[in-house]
Image (tube, rainbow, N blue to C red; front, side, top):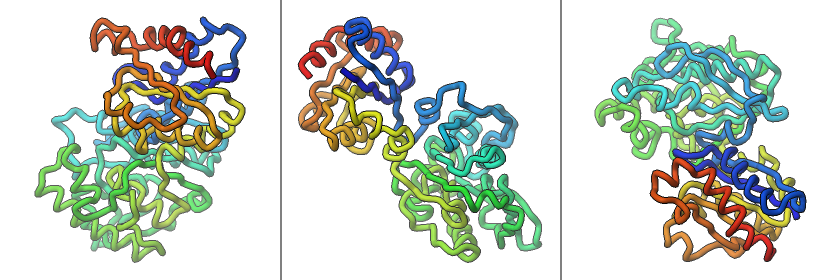
Length: 374
């Protein structure tokens, strides 16, 4: 029997990789060498994607700017011929204390430094995840790090932030490396917000980044002006592209001037992980997450795993920390069971703190009972 173990992270408790190993340990204790297990941790294209897709020995560490412009050590990953870069590593909201967050002043410059380093190492495919950002600069900081010059009315070059996008008069792309134009950028997001307007980058996501209503309206006006400059300089309209507002609009210059495409996060991750090939000869697929709810089968990690498994008629078992009863009312046909670790624990805190032990126990008992029927 071949079992593919492909969970998401258990938020606040376990990474996807640790969760997969815990399930594998329980299965091995019960089955021994009678089964082949493959651990394939998965994410939905947001934070945690790097950890899920790239083991620590395949990660590259460099110095780059954080959202406030201070130097810090960051890492990105290499998976085959693809560099996996999480925007949040250099421009993440969690990198800034709450009292210092400011949507109009933060920069994506450090993300550009990571991309530039990947280009210098010969990577011509880049998977960029854009969740969890502290920025609203339309990717201007990132593009400046790559070599683009943003010029004001006096012809002076500067690195724009959300508040200064309105000062951009023109763009000089002569210092962009030739490798930029030959690189394929796959941009992972699970949102469809456009760059500007009431559902755009500033108005929807700006409040959590430290922007007041007045400030965010100012940033949005600057973003509209910035979009005009991008569209005048390039050959692609970007402001209304679904998903371009993700990550404070970081994808805008990549879409305007590069070989870039927005893709649904979970689909991009499954493609990068070669998921379909791995499960082709599997007997069972196991997935899971911290809490199964009504959204789990609608665009999140579990939904992607389940739908891809269904295409090749593979049964799926979900092993979770806990679940909402409503999530069990309409399970996909190929989901043969949902097992929760919560009933094994003494409390919610116990469940969170000892999640790996409880997953291992589930895998060797209740999960075993389901697997032996397959």
